[in-house]
Image (cartoon, rainbow, N blue to C red; front, side, top):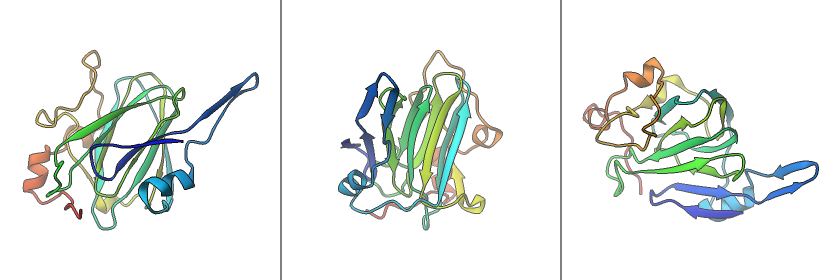
Length: 189
């Protein structure tokens, strides 16, 4: 498995080897030994999520209160996703920066983001599937969001798509508004 750390501390890309033959394809999107080798600790999996989105759907930027936070390991078994990690940690040297990675079943690439980082994605195809492992269960009282359309963030959504957002995401505060309201996690660096 190839592993590369993103420029935002606490985020990595994992790309497993694919095995293709006349029967089809086999791939192991998550491999604990490679994960521990990169991150330095195992990932506790408390919940597995699976979403199907039509082309143009943007979900996020979502994050959880820290502690406990919620780490995510995200991959795309069907369709194409533009996955974005956003540093929403106050005091981080990369606060407000983002990294985007295209996820497809052809590459089987996965993105891991540590607790305290923001996560968003855009479906680039109809029926795009995001499957992700989460370190903690969904806890509505601790879930937060900032606007994926915040012009100050300048997230790289494709210009040929009209973003489709949930009501919650459409009314989310900007990163600056969330910081002013004290809603963002602190960098524990």
